[in-house]
Length: 313
Image (cartoon, rainbow, N blue to C red; front, side):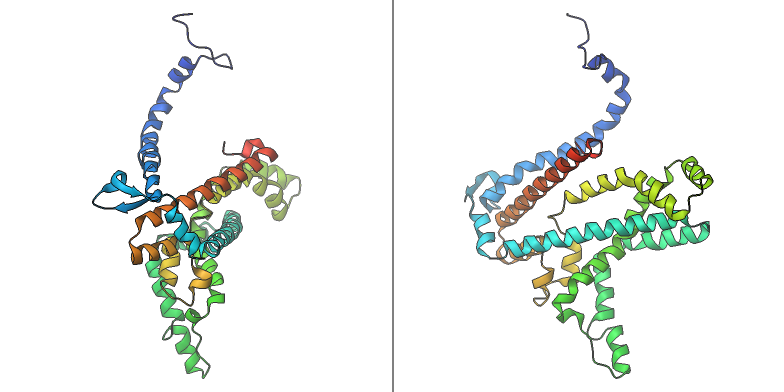
C-alpha cells in the first residue's frame, strides 16, 4: 500500500535497512565514485582495440579495422608462448608467494623476542619499497660481466659466470627476485589475520597438551583458510597480467633472455614503441582482461561448489 515500506525477504523493509546503515553507505560513496570513474567509465576505451587509432581523429573518429589488431598478435607466432610464459610465471609466483608468506607469518608469530621480531619484520618489509630499477641495478652489479661475483671468481682463477647469457636460469632468478621483494608485504596481511585469532583457543590447546606444530596445523592454518582463499582469488584475477616493471627492468631488450622471460606486457610495449600501434596494445590488453575474467569466474565457481562461504560472489 502507498506510504508503506517495501518489505524485504527477511521481513525488514529496504527503506529501514538503508536508514539503519546510512553511515556505512555514506562512507562507501567515495570508493564507489572512484571505482566507477577509474574502472567502469574507461571501459568505453575498449573500442580502440578494434580501430586504427589516429591521434588527430581521436577514439571515436578513428577508422574501424575489426579484428586486424588481434590478427597481428596471432600472426606474430608469439601469442601462445607469451601467454604460456605469463600464465606459468604468475602461477609460480602465486604458489611460492602463498607458501612463503604464510610460512614467515607463522614463524614471526611464534617468535617470543619482541625486538628481534620487529627487526625481522622490518627487514622483510623493506624490499617492497625498493624500485625495480634499483633491483635491476643491484642484480647487474652482482651478476654482470664486471660484477662482484665475476670479480671474486676471476681473483680465484675460476671462469666468469654471466647470467645474462643463460636463458634457462632466468625463471629461477625471476621467482627468487619476486619472493625477495613481495614476501614481506604479504606476510603482514597473514600476520594480521593470525593476531586476530582468539588467544583462548591457543591456551586451551596448550592445556590439552598440544605442541607448537599441532597448534599451527590444527588452529593457525585452519583459521587462516578464509584469508588464504580470498588472497588467492584476488591473485588469480590478474594471472594473465605480468609485473611489467620487474620483467622489463631485469630483462630489458636482451634477445637471449626473451625466449624464457618475455611476457605479454613487455612484448606489447616493445611492439608499440616500434610501430606506434595503440590499437594493437589495446587489443592485447583486452585479450588479457578476457582471460583474467574467465579464470577468476572459473576459480570462484569451483570454490563456490566446494564451500560457498569462501566464494567472492
